[in-house]
Amino acid sequence: MKYYLGVDGGGTKTDYILINEKFLVIDRLQGGTTNHEALQNGYDGTYYELYEHIHKLLSRNNLQIGDVKDAVFGLAGIDFCFQHDVISKSIVKIGLSKFLLCNDGFLGVKAMGLSGKQSGINYNSGTATCCAGIDDSGNMLQLGGIGELSGDFGGGLTITQSVYMLIYRELFLKKAKTILTKYYFDEFKITNREEFLESARFFSESYIPDFRKKLVEIFFIALNEGDAECNKIAHKMASKGAVYISAMLENLRFEGNVNIILSGSIHSKADSARYIDLLTKELENKHGSIFNFHILETEPVDGTRNWIEERNS
Image 1 (cartoon, rainbow, N blue to C red):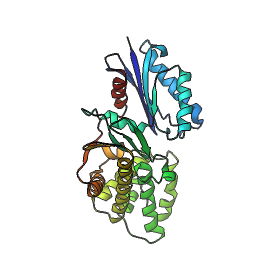
Image 2 (cartoon, rainbow, N blue to C red; image 1 turned 180 degrees about the horizontal axis):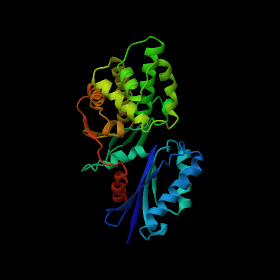
Image 3 (cartoon, helix red, strand yellow; image 1 turned 30 degrees about the vertical axis):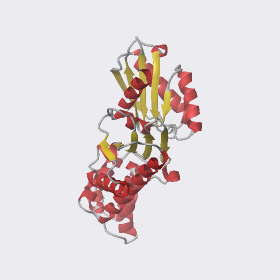
Image 4 (cartoon, rainbow, N blue to C red; image 1 turned 90 degrees about the vertical axis):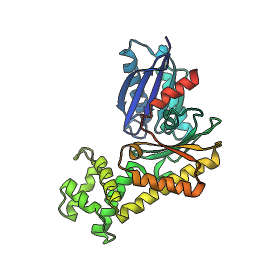
């Protein structure tokens, strides 16, 4: 029997799947982040996380690392060749010789399971944002994904910081009012601006479960109710996404309509239809009706299964 391994490592969690020779997923396991940028011990932390969970998945199926014939790793934090080389060495150290390692953003293209050509552009918006494209010839390109250094604007980090910033501007700088203030005060039992200022500690301390998730929910509630300040943020997010996708078209080669996959929790789980509409309209205004838009509803780790089948058929 041949077995294969798929790993999708994001900013907060990592999904592992075990695949048999018929390319069927036979077991799944979830662990913490494998992003070296989010781990206290950096690249060593990535190695230990991968080693522990891969061996756990294999051992409970009475398998050893030598039984794995191929693997696909899509990991957050693979943005440069140096990072790719360091983590590749860790994977070899674990015991794998044949594998594909890339940024997790590329998995969205393969996870769609689109018939015909397995090409497209995945704009991922989860904790952060990243744009990854695979063209009709298999050429791959990543844009963004390194935060402020690449000018990223979107994802949960952008939204949560923007919520606090807009309320701060209203309360302390006497700038435009936003209905975010009422929702924030009600949600977190805030009664005055001094208490609001103190609540900044929630960003780094575990006082409130799902604090950032609640801020994202508040943002989209306010956006959908027509809040002008939230609308400005949403327009900026959409414009940044359109810039990345447009740059993909200039750097990669696609024939016919281009598949645009919108993945990540902001696209697939949040009540973000209004923002997505801004993004799609901006792209169509710039390029015309050349896109097939898809919201990625399946787990990105399923893209590793499709990729493994493509590599081994």
